[in-house]
Image (tube, rainbow, N blue to C red):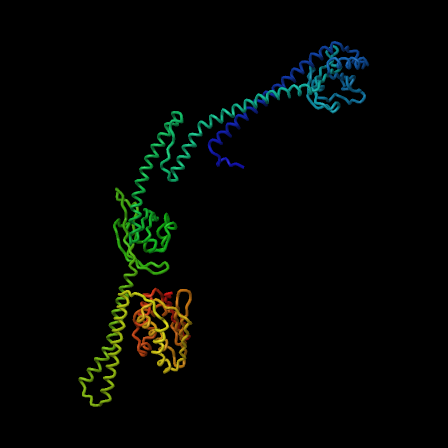
Length: 593
């Protein structure tokens, strides 16, 4: 079923016009048909009245009073001449004669409406009703029969309305034909009138719709229409041309601004005076980890869930001057942001909006922290052996130690600390070299490098009674690597496994090919690494157990060197560990085949 609000103006006008025309035609048809029926009934009454007067002149009062049988003959004769039913009724309602039925079978007619009217009005009475006797709708007309101004009976004439209905049906057919022709003509004229008015409007609407979708070249043909619509079309075309020029100009300016904003490293958020986001550039979206579609038009605090940013923006609005603050924000990772809040003022110095410029200084702060930690750790690591060395040297120089064993023990300690210092400096230089340089990877035999490392460390594992198992896949392909660097990685990982695995433990080294990669893993059943420490073990100088690490001779740089070397090889060093259940370190190298 069509909904009215979804119909176009043309269809609405046509429907309204058709409904009005049909209503007028229907009303006219009803008026004419009703009037014609009344006219024919009135003519029929007049005819019955005249005929009744003629019959009254031929009825004597004595015939009525004596209920003479002659009345039946007269009624039958008069009825045959006029096709009218004649009924003569006594004053008490008894039927004295009837042209069509036996009076013995007829009931008292005193209460018939037309009879009652004739008696009460003492003139005449009429009624239209359905006759149960002859099963036909009839027009009854009754007049009193008088004797010296006294009603002694009633003469009732009746004719069926079948004739009137047949005449009315013919009239209705004629009227219907006329009204149908009239309706078709008026509907056609209405449709043409509506079309001539609505068609230009549809053209304007279609053109406006195309313009709204971006086709600004659309124009309305002017010469097709009359003067009023032609004027509308000219003004519309002028407006479209102006709109095209303005949109082109705005689009160019918008593209320039967007290009600037998108290329900016700093984040930019523009808000209106109510604090709702009007614009946010990609850098700001990356900082806050949000999507532009989800924040535009929303309040800043509900978008970013940061009361501090909203508070500083309100403060900048209140002071009407720019303010800068350093803010910590977490979503999901914690970031440190340097934010500048700039209020925008109109000509009357009222707040019209604001701009927030954001600089992500998280990495800068991390670098500062790393640098400070590095300086502190290097200072500590260097100071510890140097302090020990200086202490023993001072003792040797200031004290007269004659015991050779004591002097040799002091010198041995100084030598150990010197070696430790030398290893630390070497590791630092290696790490600096790896971080600052890039190396060309070459196809090489990983299995050969692994065998050399195993041969080098196997004796150390045997000394601790460690079950040292090496499993290498057959036909291992060449891999892209820097031989000396990978050798250093393997020494660090396997040596660590031996160091942190208790005597009688087990270490398994496994090498296998999967797809275009060769995977290396070293697994031990040593002390394991706590979950909280697993993310930091690759940091420089980080130790899970500092006392134990120093006792085992570690510098705290080995895993950091491993991580950087593996990164240079396009891979990542991974660790799986559970405290008290051992650790597994693994990485992959790309095959050269």
